[in-house]
Length: 300
Image (cartoon, rainbow, N blue to C red; front, side, top):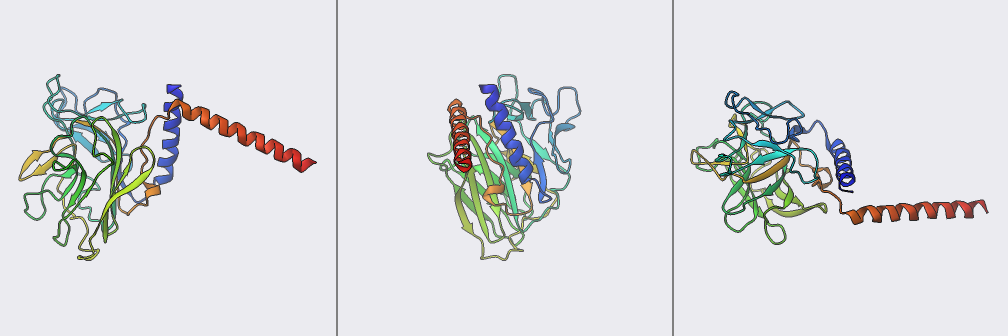
């Protein structure tokens, strides 16, 4: 039954992903190009030489080495496929691990509208945990240009962005009961140039957590800074240092240059409960029975 559930989850997700794919996608990492347990950059390979390649523009998300880079893992929300494993102080000798991008279509990217998504499962939620960030500030500030983060204040998700116009926008959003450990979330940050919003799917579809009016600046001024500062995955940057590492799992990282509707966001892929199959089967049988009865009445 579990195998059927995993297969069904993958099939449903595949249909959704195909429907959501478009030229608006700048990068998408599904981490299906590795092997369970394999480091992004294995022992003996040049530092920063390995990683996961995005499926749209071929951008390599790198891992520095076996100690400071992520690994591929089969621990996914759907129970099948692969994700990215980020560890802190692991028994095997790892200290911290993160992914990073140093070249490609996301460098110089300065959209006036955008959507950035990921799914995440945090083993630890104390302090700050940066899911997606940038390796510096284009305006000489201590804070990075971008943070999609679990904040260290009141256990909420946060989007914190600097803009071309110089205004920094910060928005928090809280799942019911706050962010929990060992729980899968699909999280999306979205901007249409005038409104910034956070969206969350916990397995029952996306709901908007919060929104922020940015109309004090123009749409052009609210664009993300188009610089060659690298993007980071599983850690942040502050005051010149690497901070706020994630201890957990990440999957389905996607960048789009449009403000996607909720129906276009990547859904959280989950394994259906066994009862779901019997409910679906009962519904199918009922529908078939109704069609036969209707056909019989039509013949009469």
